[in-house]
Image 1 (cartoon, one colour):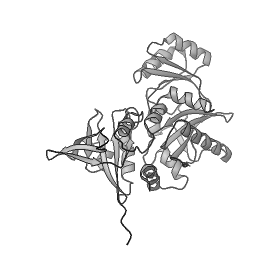
Image 2 (cartoon, helix red, strand yellow; image 1 turned 90 degrees about the vertical axis):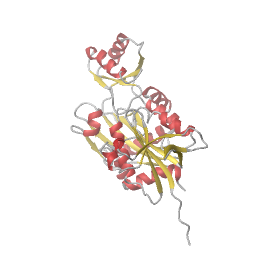
Image 3 (tube, rainbow, N blue to C red; image 1 turned 135 degrees about the horizontal axis):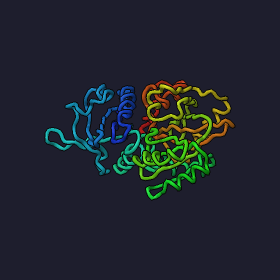
Image 4 (spheres, one colour; image 1 turned 120 degrees about the vertical axis):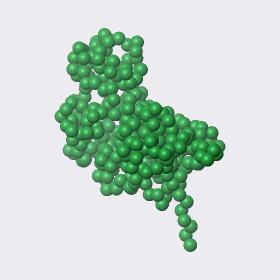
Length: 353
């Protein structure tokens, strides 16, 4: 008689302190509701906007509607940094209890989730991270550092200028004039187009810098790249699975935070309206970038395709949106995988046989 396969204990971490807290809830709900519970025992760890950690044992619909933290099924908990523990510590019935974890999947978009901080805690605790590790997460979150490494790998990146608070508006104005308007002003390490401005003249520069500095101590100015944005989903560790290339059409200017989640003016095409040869070139570039930045597990690589069909790197999202209608799963669905199969393959990157 065949022995029953032992279930792996997986933590899914959701919420967080970033401006993308609500998006994280939707992504986490999508993943949690499609995990095969015959293979995995789920431990749900929610982090409030204020940074309070809970073991959540309630209805997952309350994650989707954002009311999970009001549930009586919340128990204060914390990941123990002690490798001997290797899991989540909480107190119940006046007793300290421990749930050992085989792996953890952070579904925390933006700062304090996608920037290496939570990954560092998990690695310190000896808990395998499903997805990118500490270093690759931190590098990909920092637009300046990721651009430097991608350029060293032989892929074109936008011209840029990096400023900290000591930088002068005049310095930015000189660079912008030389580069040519419009330009983009961005926080160097923030997700989902938060704090980004498209600047058309010098009069808008000071306001754009102030908006970016509200989110980060380091700001990057980038040249505008003519053309359109394309993306490629990457899944795996040693052997990589590449999604069908998608294309973003943005008549409204650029793919800002609101457009990413409402798509009122923009449209996403899967597959992209490009030749199969160009799509293959984009997939190869995505794989090259993924490896150059030390990524693992999953990530979405975004590039620009210019009118001359040249590829220019934009960014890597190490925890891309993961709702059933998000770009990342839809690119993999276009290769023939179901959402459930995508989730299963992702979990198996760390706990596979």
